[in-house]
Image 1 (tube, rainbow, N blue to C red):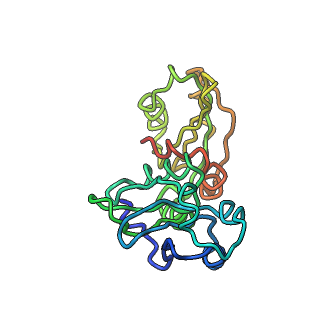
Image 2 (image 1 turned 90 degrees about the horizontal axis):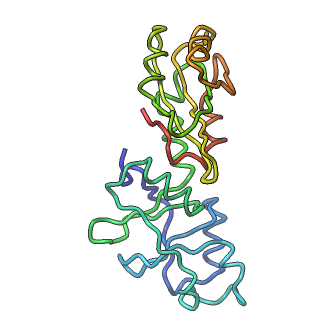
Image 3 (image 1 turned 90 degrees about the vertical axis):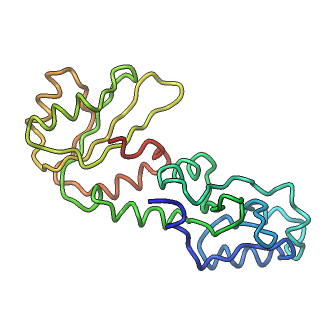
Length: 220
């Protein structure tokens, strides 16, 4: 799914002549903490709720605070997983979408992204969850998938979380079986460290809890 398919049409961008008071009202109306700022079709950046609250006078125009605008955006042909990475990297509640001429097309909200994720088969289908801890150099999804498929099971989805200062990573896997004991036994025999498992689980809540580390989602 591409960024252009995720645009929310009902959120208007701010213009430079709009005031901080207008910005806060729209943020409250749409339950977001950022808004895009445009000049006709030209994207100028996003402004945050905290920036607006820092204004000396909420009646002032956005044009007086151009230096606060964040120029980050995605293009309309970028995949949803790339969109998620940008949102995560910059802690945004919306992300502006531009076309190939860098004209503003609209914005995507976190709520819209999570709605799409919740509709994916990985979230909707029943199954169990495994979390493995392993060294970066030992990561081979092909090998892990082979072990799982050897038990007549399939990986519905997976994602990786790690920190920059660690040599270890966590691989979360959703499997289309609710009885994971045989799979766990085999993985342990191959010296994989299982740090968590849950059978007959709903993956949606886990996805929401891990959204901030979602940049490597579904590495299948």
